[in-house]
Length: 340
Image (cartoon, rainbow, N blue to C red; front, side, top):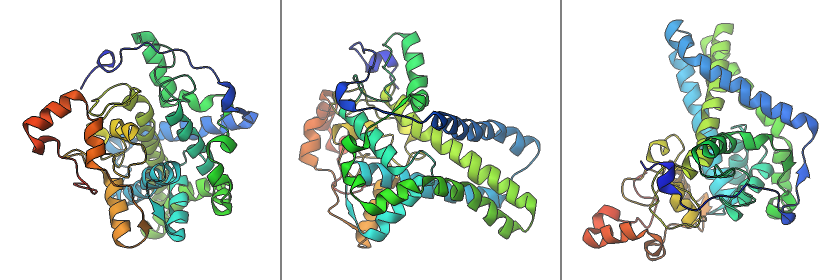
């Protein structure tokens, strides 16, 4: 894996609001709520190891619930909030469209409209002035980058301004169903936290079962998913491989691929943002792309923007093009979802 200095050569400038961003001041209490939903699950994640190993406060039902809710909410972000709502990588029938909006909201990463507006803004200004969460915000020496990594990972969420939804997601603002789901975010947060506990109580039959299910499948699951998602903003714009030519510092990070459902193949994503598959090279596992492929086969989605080999070949770095000339199998680009 390359170092930060390997992956960036041009100095970054400090990000200040641009006139066309139309910032919208956040209500005073919103930062407090963000702090609560960041800190409480994080404390649970920190406590998870001694609770599991030292006191044995975990059972197989908790593990099953945590994995299931992680898959639902994580795919809601990767397949739904990101590839569908933000980038229109495919079209979906109404039932799946609503299901993806609800599933992504269960990740507790913010309302649908807020998430999409922030991410579209990120792509417009990626690693430049105006990017809401670039790790290069403060410069490129090690002190500035350390500060920038913390900012990109979670500090940016405490910024005093909203990204304008009128400017960055007018299509979703015009969709009554999506506006309603976005407004129902507090209700969906409650469901995401309480439902695992209710299932644990019904499944195990004791209040202890409800408590441990809440701890593992609600708090720890949310915290773990948060940090995986935030790592795409921080780690995947600092470390990793540049396999496709981009104008920013997005990189591919292989060890995050499975946990992020393929989102950490971030370099290709920035080279071709509307592509439904991010891990296009041989051996790059992309779970979200596989789920899109299955949904296409079932007739739930259509007009999927699968990778175009000719277009992507032109975007490969010089090193990959040279390797491709030596052995096509080493860098074969799949036309469909491939080996997810």
